[in-house]
Image (cartoon, rainbow, N blue to C red; front, side, top):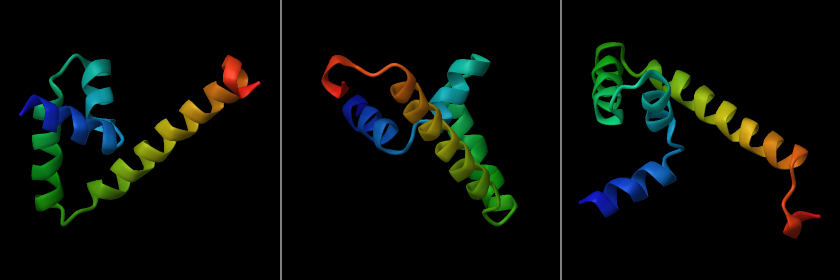
Length: 73
């Protein structure tokens, strides 16, 4: 079960896991709150999730650009 969870977290941008690390809350509780609020507000938090995922990927890309590895030189 843990292998499946880690696979999904790595493939689904890791937004909830990253928020959990920053706020010292378990990622599973953040996911539950996200699901509940998505159901109550008819999916509007999905837009926020996608914006955060985009922002995280852009930060990762910018870090690679400023500090390239040996293979990227």
